[in-house]
Length: 204
Image (cartoon, rainbow, N blue to C red; front, side, top):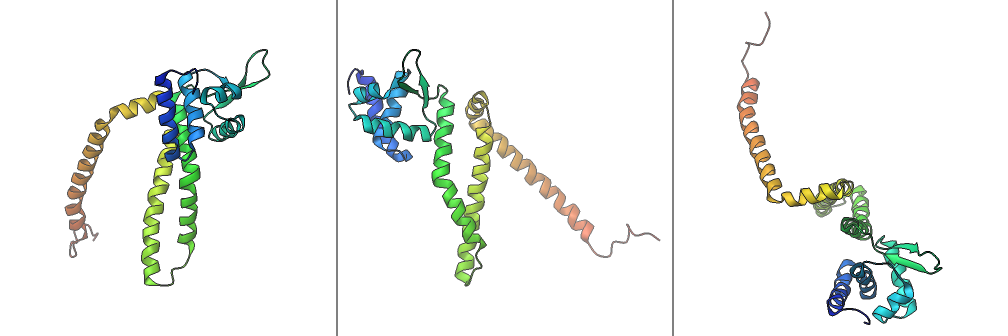
């Protein structure tokens, strides 16, 4: 790496290693990290020089990042070359990563589970397996719906929501307690209403 501080190099190298765990290769991860940490648009030649990558590897990496919506293309006045920069809002980056991972990893699983649930089970073992698949499908579908809701929130709302932390858990616990108490209170009333021989509500 050239013309980069030790701190920037450390970040770029680490991000390259982490990229493989997120479904992108090391080269792509390092290109993204360079653009992010320098916080200024770079053209492909500058990226290749900084990271000492071949021009072809940089071009392929930039196409990959564009498909993930993690970089955008722009032009400088009086310069015909293409420049690239990451989204300025960190929340946009976070949501783009989650959305792409869902598209590549979660949606194929949901598709497979839908097909499996449409099949008629031939044996008891298949019925048990299909029921387990249904539970998994319902959980993933619920998570996807929640993710869609989160994607529509503003960065300010997301930040506030995450900062609430344990407060949200406390509110949910209170809600569970209230619902449990209400169900216990309603149970005797329902049982009493269902007892046979009670003619008090009958007309003459």
